[in-house]
Image 1 (spheres, rainbow, N blue to C red):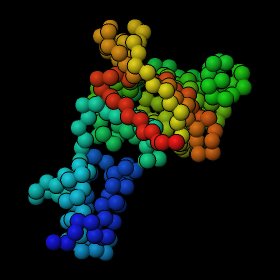
Image 2 (tube, one colour):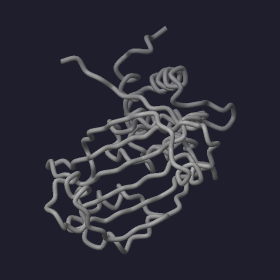
Image 3 (cartoon, rainbow, N blue to C red):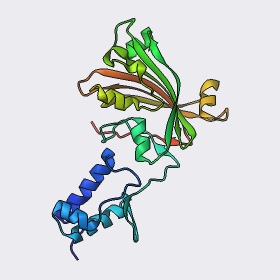
Image 4 (cartoon, rainbow, N blue to C red):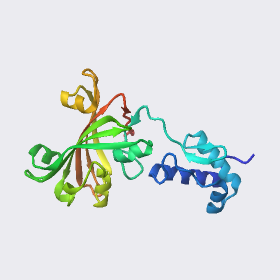
Length: 245
């Protein structure tokens, strides 16, 4: 039997994985037929079959007899929100939820322009600078799993106060202005929260949560965001990658 690791099969496997990681293919999307992919990539149908076998074993796709091959819907009793190093280009929570196939929504608690030395310092701004504050509850399949307090340098994002962030991704908007967050400096603790956050997250009094605090910079190195997020431990997990120095 021909090796599953031959070059045509590896090429097709890489193309499909890249499309899944980038969000071009979403959970539940149907792939082209093996015959169509063979014609599209100029390879044998057998090479496509081997690539699909490998992708299915690795959990990227599932094949349904008589129907076709689909991007696999992930099981997400817990979502991994260690998303800051996302390879998709959009490391935001909306992109993460899409990758999990979740039905997501937001409730905006507050938005508007504020000033404050604490947030100016976090964003490397002069005292009295205009800062856009966005406070939201994030929902997955109708259940709250995180509350976020985001602070953005308003003068770098013209018109930000007019955007409906109940329905629009903050990072998609930032990307439209050429300032997509790319690199993150994060801190994480497990904490007890105030009565206010417990109400937002529908928690019992003694349940701890993840407290994530991070600043992000765009491709040019400009500070573009300071955010604090409280996430339910029973709904998410947090994974961080480390490298040896």
